[in-house]
Picture 1: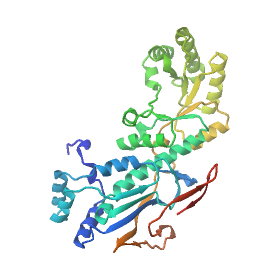
Picture 2: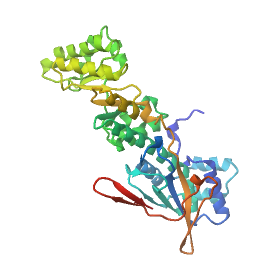
Picture 3: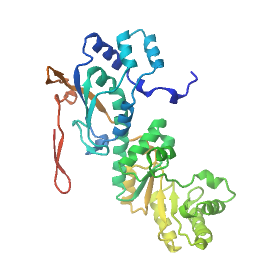
Picture 4: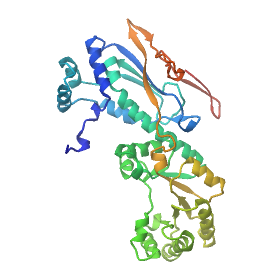
Length: 381
């Protein structure tokens, strides 16, 4: 199939059974019955004490523009599953459900409704997959990002994960979710453009390799970007050539311009040891204000260990372990029917299971949080 993925209508993205159930609601004259669905999750990622909610803006944009084009209708016809009444409904589809949600970026906890959808059964059912796809992914990345940012103890953290993300949308919206959770910027230029998020970056090892010497590479970069000069010092030998050549570049290129260097970046090796040695070398050369940036498969656990070892690090660049939430790659949010309306009354609905964790809490709920001056003291549903 020779097609551009961007040509496809995202509205059709759903599990097939959403459509067969929707057809069934038409068959039983239940399509207009008012329903309530809760979105919630059962366990915090990485056995943590909280999660971060993200994806609301993305989801509402899709739902507000949700429609089915002529090509979609022809495809549904070809499946020989849906009748003309249902296809006509899709052809004239307009999303009219009400949504209640916690604000984007909120701290959330298991088994509480983070979103409630109220509307006709046929509409509320159709959005289950897209709602969970977006909320699960973006809340997962926001949660991981928050944990990483907290581990950094006030130091800057940059998202560098685009090349290891699991798809284009995962890279773009994952970077956005990380920013919502407190990450300071991203290397992803498309995310920066779409959402007005700071874009950041230094250089790759290939830049250094392109020149005859490491020093030539550093000087060329400093001349091109004197006001944002961060030099990658581990291409060959961090302490014997990388840091000394960075200092020489600062002395010979930036100092005559009256410009202070931004710093250096370490991307391999024993980061705790190398950062301490590099800090001493920079300080001895008069560059106490030069920052040390580190990267290399980092997450909240490695950051914690580095700081415990006394690493001299000013900021972190985090890639694959953030953008994929490598230590816990599934959020596990669910979308469950909790009530219907009949004759003006709200009738609670429950799913019962031998697995206690999968028993749902029936009924329409209000969520309250009670705070003191420092923290959440209690949550009530």
